[in-house]
Image: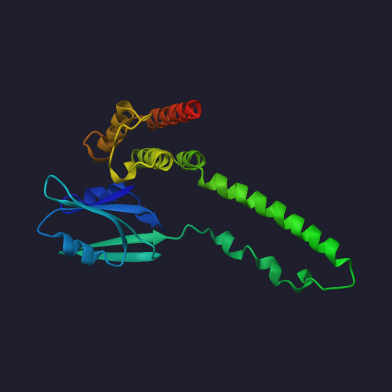
Length: 235
């Protein structure tokens, strides 16, 4: 979950997060001031709103998703916010079928035992399909995603990224809404786990932003490994 706050906290939040977002990322805005729900919905009518709630302090918290690549300008009240959205497709993936444009790769039908050839081709396709299905399943595995993203944690992004990836893993495994800020201790998630995530929030927005990111990264993995063990034992 990536948060941006409109109002007096706008600059602080923009400095706390990446300037670029991937398609499908959930973006949360906290809006303070003289504005109502219908004005917010109208300002975000071109995007997919996941939730829109009024906070205890009178501000609005809205979570939405952008599917348009490029610079998206959002105007709410007298505030303008520019959000850059990038595609998750790598440049190399755009040329995946380049070899098929080569005439030398064209199949020319001749007098071969067609049934045998077709059976062989069908078998190869089945094996390739099964292999790619396995890769797709791995790509969707919350634990695989967590390890991949945690490998990108460094001294400049850890305050946001460790919390983001841990909450994303918990939501993917237990159907919770930690990315939306709902920190509920639902078994096997404990209050100690939620307290750790809250402490990461304090690091992002509090005045004391020091800490050893390797230690926090290890604590996050300790939580994940314990959750995995308990889930395995409960099966």
